[in-house]
Image (tube, rainbow, N blue to C red; front, side, top):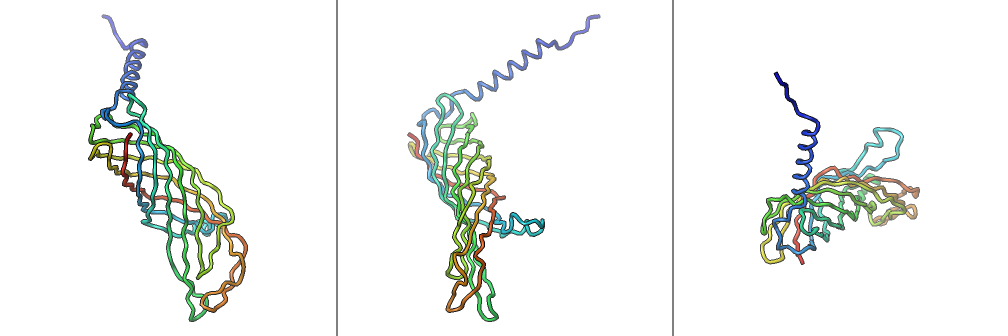
Length: 246
């Protein structure tokens, strides 16, 4: 009786065939061959959830976890994408402007309530790689992607009519993954709907320039020492974009 099995050369052959098939999938001509190589996008976005940690450097773990929730805030942005010829691969560089804010009040005296505006402004600058799913057509496309970015931001804090401006901040770095669909409705114009999971984080340092501050004729004592904070998103980013290819 002769016993046969899978030889090492046979295993290498199967691996070689799988590798060639994968490469062919990546390098196959995109189904949307009529597109221009460059696409400019103007977009609006909605971030569902974020947190502003007000004591990020505290020694006590409970104080360090204290945060201000910020939900459902909008932003705008622009992006330039480049599709590598004869492939299903594209790369893009984008910049957004996002401002998250919330309002509350502070009881400074028994019968005096002082409004408080808090939140942050951030400009994410991101580089993204895209893989266009091969079954996409000239009018309808599906893609996925991921990348990294730098986040330049500052906390916006106002007590009454007085701001505590940002004195020092550190740009954050994070990664993101996304998926989207596109629909070409007229010539080079297309509309894109995208869902992104973004790990956005940055630090900010603020301080009041003088104490006390005045609100409606009342003096309020505040500290002038810098205070640190940290912004971090933990929600989903939904984006709607209009693209022009050339």
